[in-house]
Length: 160
Image 1: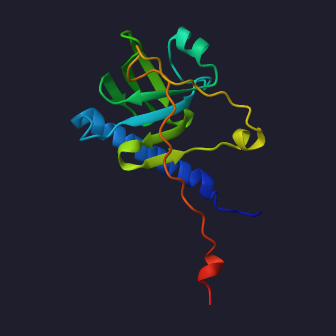
Image 2: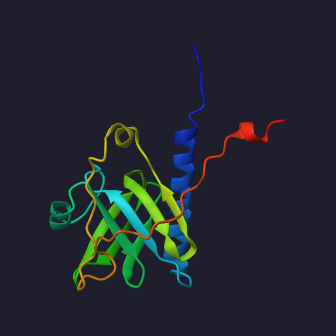
């Protein structure tokens, strides 16, 4: 029986733990300075709870912005609940960490991207949310600013 370490799953779990810690701190103290978050998530994840009109408008994935106005942020080990403003209409959302595809804080050029095996098998077949409407602040779907991607370095280049 062979045993191997699943580094990909371990990293994803650690990165989701980081998101939980950040949101926990924001729930307790608020957003510091210019920090704000673009969170893209799978609207079809079985544990996501959003209004029907939002899942109809964004079938597949949606990006929300937590910046100037959000309320009722409640963080658990499995996910977080928050009320966001969609065109002056507050809507409660529940997003499990497993549904998150990207988490970006453009104020400090920080970003995490989660890739699943299904996404690796698809060829660009996922839909993305459109840019936010002018009258829909904060939570409306928006394309996040691009965070710099990490560079993979071969360890062979450091061997003598």
